[in-house]
Image 1 (cartoon, rainbow, N blue to C red):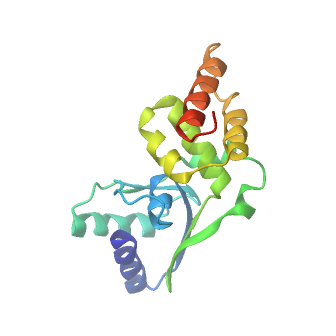
Image 2: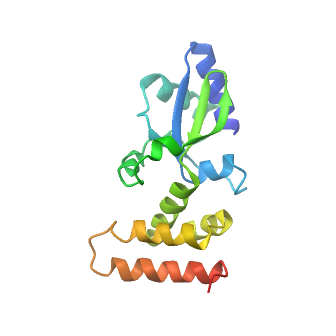
Image 3: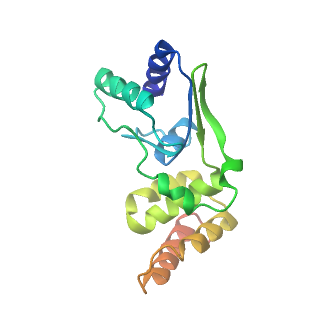
Length: 170
């Protein structure tokens, strides 16, 4: 939150307003779902413009953050979200010159589950999100077609089964 509050100040000084949609750990932090810190904020829309980039760089220098703490690395994820994702976003940070929105709960569960299938570090985030069995099944089904490896569906289902057990569904 400190980084966004400082970003707001830099944007205010420039007399500009910005709004963007995030995903990932920063969304969970801003919602109070997780308390750990996250090293970056992943923007999926719109692309970061020069003014936002310069303001974010100033924030990184002031707070000692990585220069890419505000990034659009996952912007292509929007193509993988269920249709209508833009209509499901909600506000997680608001100031006069800065509005930050998050992808929806169902979209967060999907993206975190998909990430879990690639890297185990996302498991704790999913556990803290406490998806219902229905939400988890939807995420599993959405993730099944996201890799061309012939063993991917088996891996996805295995990760789903492990998570179901940890959440007490089996």
